[in-house]
Length: 237
Image (cartoon, rainbow, N blue to C red; front, top):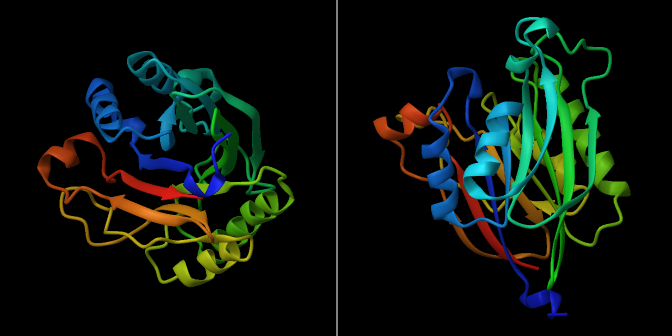
């Protein structure tokens, strides 16, 4: 097994606004070009992540967040997903908005999976925090941190749309830093046509060495894909 200090990982996060029915072949082409080891997606329908996985020849895990219409229109359910060219194991899905019905958009979930390569394993926690309530967003970040805290996998990362566009990023990130995660900083990610706010994150272990970060500059072509830009972080740990 390789020395853990020399193990390089590339992690990507992207809210693809699946309700707008984006061009999945174009989404897959962007992912392929960026060559991540693992991807956390938000606002993606199950049938969409299946198609993306087929395009890429990858493995995937998906968790329903809410039904935007009713369960009768089950194929329009929105959720979050993890994709990787590597096998995904120890999959976990849990609610981080207790007491909120899965029929409304305020329902939020956490999805986790372990990515295993010959040179090591990485556990990804993917989420999409509350959009309109800063106090609930911070509480959800704490619930995510609680799950990371008790996990026994040596390396953890968190990806997601953290919705920290109202000054709550300090409190949200404080909860996640408390469990050994760090923010490598990054560019604005939303709206993708002319971004002016940063709400999409890849948080890495505090002792990781970040070797590269990448967020596109934005523009009309990106706006045609989603209202968010993808964020890639490469690190060693």
